[in-house]
Image (cartoon, rainbow, N blue to C red; front, top):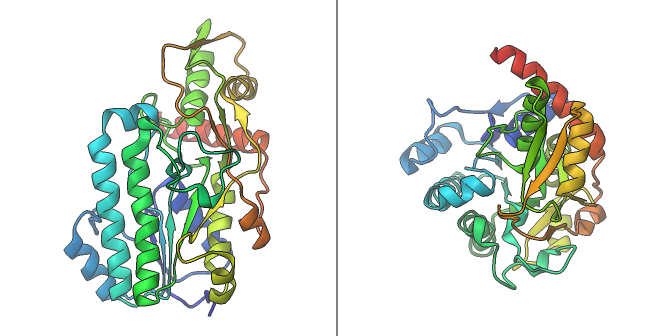
Length: 323
């Protein structure tokens, strides 16, 4: 059983960065029976509304891309929101999918599920092997619970619920908020505004030494669709009942300092760049081992240079529209 063009496909979080990319890709590939609902029509925090939605529409496949996300500052400032909202949303959707006999569900997690000091690159079986990074622990625990919930429903009910753990994502429809966004979009906006305002110096949070892996959201969407279309027997042979998630990464990482230099070059910012080491660095390094996904026939295609360039072009166009 593989995903057919006539199947009804529900994308939870279709207006977010990842959900919108999945929506675009499915449309491009000819899947035209796509089911979406914005917050005015469906409150994912309401168990009854989610249950009624699934009962009414009976989707065949579900991409669970809805989540509350943010960078270090947002996670540090709103820990209760991050754990409560994410647990609530994923609990409602996974349980409703089971009750509605959904053929297959894909849960999107995050690489922050892995321990702060996990061996690099991080393999799937390093989950729950050590302490989490404190700055985003509530969010990480919610995502771990989502993985285990999918595993538990598979074991008890024989469902086909799968989980993918992406590395740091960026691209079209990212959050470019100056305080609550992730590092790449935050830096892109900061350098863009510094160039516009002829600001002589841009200060980057932290020492610049941590290394991060970045994956363009269009690559992530392609990986999600690829995983969703893998036959059940092939998937079950690749994973284990107690470790049923797979990593989705780019394959290499970059220091925050080098990332800042690359973004400054892309934006054509000519001023000085300094680093404020009084601000938190977060995890020293986060590089995923994505060999399992490669063995299943998928690898990233968009280079970091290409991705930042296209993201900046989209950001400038969106900025013009906002103005």
